Length: 196
Image (cartoon, rainbow, N blue to C red):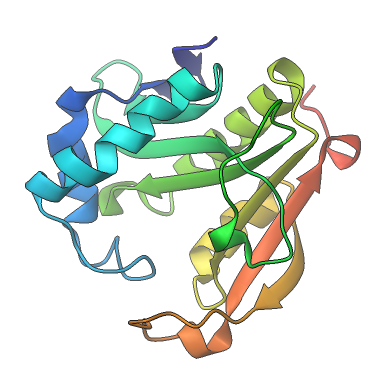
């Protein structure tokens, strides 16, 4: 079970309770949360956000959520996650956690605004895809984002995932752009171009 993964520019380490302030720098930024929902307080992060993220590693060894820090100075970049899910006919955003041996994993990430457009999201996403396929026996990696979130869509495409469908979800408090739907991306291990 990997508690740390290394990429060219980052160390990915398991999230801990000490990361609450780091997550606040993400979830407290309205631009970071533009396609995700309302900003969060430190109390919400400590009580509602961090506990399920940290427990994912325990429930699914090798999977979970990692804090990303730069090599050298250890500056917080954001987080990356690989959560085992059970596919259903519903939109991906509603897929439950996996039961039994996980074969499908949902890729997720969130980066500080100061690290956008520098390739960190693609670098971390590719690292988790590789980890899932080579070390965890994952058969498929999936991801979803709002159709209007063009930056995240580019990251998914650069990471090898392909658009499979657009779905419309009836959100109780829809964000601007929701009317264009949620896009779902997938990558099968059989179609993955393994790095040289």
